Length: 493
Image 1 (cartoon, rainbow, N blue to C red):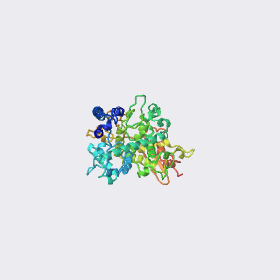
Image 2 (image 1 turned 135 degrees about the horizontal axis):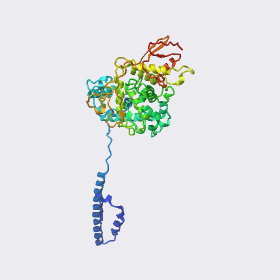
Image 3 (image 1 turned 60 degrees about the horizontal axis):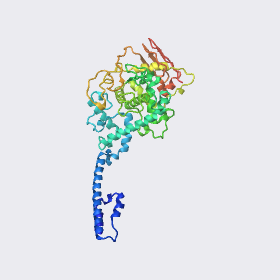
Image 4 (image 1 turned 90 degrees about the vertical axis):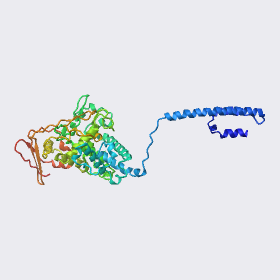
């Protein structure tokens, strides 16, 4: 009996016995008074049962192997080395800033490359000459943005690439969520249009006018009317981004919080502007704001990670690329400098747009100011007196994600699969209107020669000019006339 017990207990399959057979096994064991013959019969019976259990156990093991092999495999999370994880907080901080102020859609392949020894300067218009200069400038801008202490240890790794993409997407989603709550104030439209992401914005006439579309079949332009002052399209693109107040409000709400649209931001709050030590806008930040404006007005419910809207088919990735390219190549022109100054004043200065700043009963010079500002846009150096030409708005605008050399035709349709239509480049009339603004401590005179100028709309472009200009308009008289210049005189308030 002891021998049998030893044999059974040494078998590895004993623990796999079915509990349902224990009663049957115990019933086959004879009592202490059993004869030798009874014990032998019991032993044979037990041996047969053990053999059967072993066969069953082998069958179950084979079945288990099949189930395990057919089970879907989970993607194992690759643990990054401690040397990389130690910089996670730094990368996250700079990546969020990078996505809003530098590159909205960074190319994955370029994020794991090292900066060349002699890169093309990122802030030079030469960056858009060829696909090679675009890649070189991208890397120069990337490495310039992130701190030098992580250049060799972290940048260029898969960990860095994945973390940058994640932080940019998370930050963008968070900003869009906040902006939906105040989009009604930004666009001066009912807030319900934006609070519900699924609202049928494509059917709203006011939004259709901002996009320059109508009807159910809508083809979105790469430069919609909402980018121009008073929603008046300019085929020469001389006044593009002239409707800068929309971008300024988007950036102010994102950098200082949504409450900053109605009150001065709290100095002690941990805003993005303070965390990032941001004191002025960049070409990337203006392009970012313009794309966010278009997305909020579009019928799309979610910002696409691929860059192409699901409902609108708007290619947001291409929009950002084209807008940033235009801003960089024209950054030093008088017109863009004026727009940048106005945005900086609104976002970072104490000035805040408010019609309540105008004294009651004060004379309204909005029409004249609009005309003067329009002429100011046109009164630039010889470079701006010529129409916008490639490479600024041509099909040479190769996206960083699809670098390839191509010829430089004039402005071509948007990328394949997108629903964007670009405007043709039209040579402006040589008799373009000009305006000269002269200001001194004692008086201000605005001289405007408005030859063949279109009558300005009622909307005030200068209403976005900040508090300083709103104050100084009181008591001024602006004279716009044909022929000889007349000088209007104003007195200090």
